[in-house]
Length: 129
Image (cartoon, rainbow, N blue to C red; front, side, top):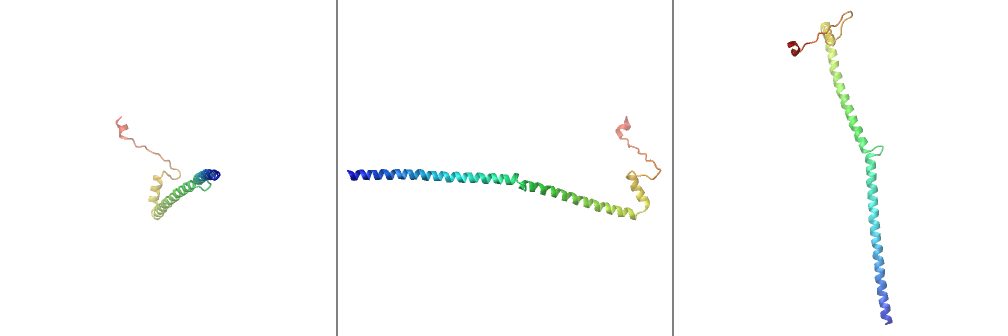
């Protein structure tokens, strides 16, 4: 009986030890999972902060590039317009003074001592009344 009792105690101790080890293993696995979850959440928060709130965030860089491209396009347009005006200026300088005077009058300029009188065109609807 004594041997059987000792055997039963050993078996019960082994069972208890296995149960304790199983609970420890479970705790370790849940701890590992929670650590991974916390790490992923922190990584996600860091990514969001970097994308939107950091001094050199991706959003700010994209916005700056967009504005820079708009300014470059505007500069190109103004350069083309300047070239056209320079060509027109050269043509006017090469032509006779009558052509220059005609262009000046189209722009609304007058010689010294002259008075400009503008006559408005009357629309056909107003003529009928």
